[in-house]
Amino acid sequence: MIQGPIVILTGAGISQESGLDTFRCAGGVWSRHDLEDVATPQGYRRNPALVQAFYNDRRRQLEDAAVRPNPAHLALARLERDWPAPVLLVTQNIDDLHERAGSRAVLHMHGELRKGRCEACGRVLEWAGDMTVESLCPACGKAGRVRPHVVWFGEVPLEMERIFQALDACALFLSIGTSGHVYPAAGFVAHVRERGLAPTVELNLEPSQGASLFHQAFYGPASDVVPRFVETVLTGDDLGPV
Picture 1 (cartoon, helix red, strand yellow):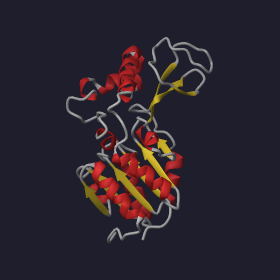
Picture 2 (cartoon, rainbow, N blue to C red):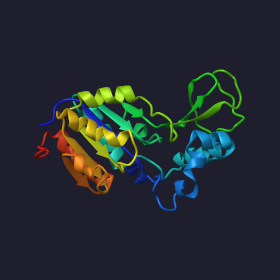
Picture 3 (cartoon, rainbow, N blue to C red):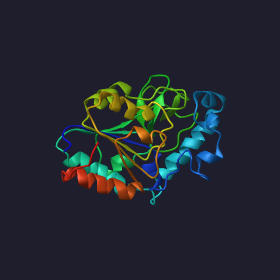
C-alpha cells in the first residue's frame, strides 16, 4: 500500500484531450511554425513581434469555451484534495487547466501562458490579454521589456531545486501524458528509480521513450486511465508488484 507524498509529472498529452495542440500534433499550431523562430531566445531577439503574436494566439485558445479541464485534470485535483499526504503536480504544460480543475500545488516548470515576465525589473506578472513589443510593465513602467513567461529551448526550467527535493521525498512518482523526449523532465523517473524507495508509474496513451524505467504502466486516453488509477490509489487497492 502506498503511503506518503506523491509527485506527478504531466505533459502535453493530458491537455491534448482538452483541445490544446502538442509539439508533435500533426497540423497543429506548433507544426505551422519553426520552433527556432517562436520557442528560443534567439528567435525572440530576431523577431519579437512574431513571438508575441504566436503566444497571443495560444493565450486566446485558452479562452475558447471548448477548452476546459478533462476528467484526468479533475481526477488529479481530487487526488490532491483527498490524499492524506502532500501531492505535488509538476507540469511541463503552460496552460492553466490543472488550476481550473482545482489543483493547488502546481509547479509550472516551463512557465505559464497567462503570465508575462519583465526583463527590466524581473517581475512575473499576471497577463490575460494580448502582449506586444510596446506593452508597458505594470510594475516598473518600462515599455518593450515584457515577454511571455515561458521557458524556451535553451533556457533553464523553473523550480528545479524544489522539484528534486520533492522527488527525493516521494512515496510514488507518476508520469502522465509525456513523450519522454524533453529533459530534464524525462530524467525524473531515472532519478526516482536510483533512490529505489518509490514505485514509478507511467500513465500514457502509448509507451514513452523511457517506458522501460517505470515499474508499472497503464496505457490509454488520459481521461480514462488517470481517473481509474486515482480511484485505485485513494481506495487503497494494491497497485500490484513493483
